Amino acid sequence: VQLQASGGGLVQAGGSLRLSCAASGRTFTSYVMGWFRQAPGKERELIGSISRSGGTIYYADSIKGRFTISRDNAKNTVYLQMNSLKPEDTAVYYCAADRVADDYILIESSKYDYWGQGTQVTVSS
Image (cartoon, rainbow, N blue to C red; front, side, top):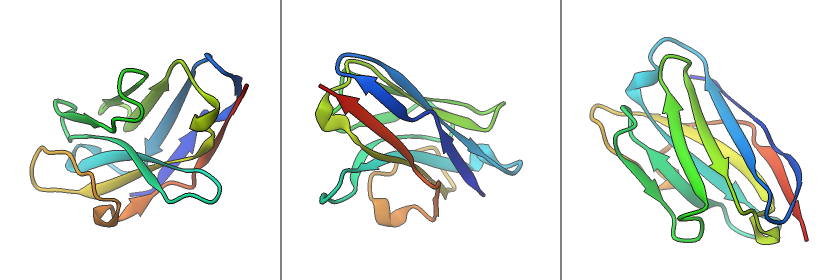
């Protein structure tokens, strides 16, 4: 599967952005999806993961209550809605996918086989 992330940009603190990650292929429902981010000088950080059906979603504590992950399996797309953005949310955001046999989330970045190219999010103070 190939992943194409989009929707990044420059936003003021307190603002919102919605990132999209479009997947190629006809088996999108076979993949658990994840969102990650990496700020300059920092390690890649898990934002969250959504199961194949979308029925189970995991969020990292750092963004819980501000970010929402969803997926539209008919459109082969996963979304990351980001609200109440803070300067510390500035990072390159990545989507990732892994083909799994069951409907569960995945929090280890090393388990994801497919990665998008990343999209820059910059939050100004």
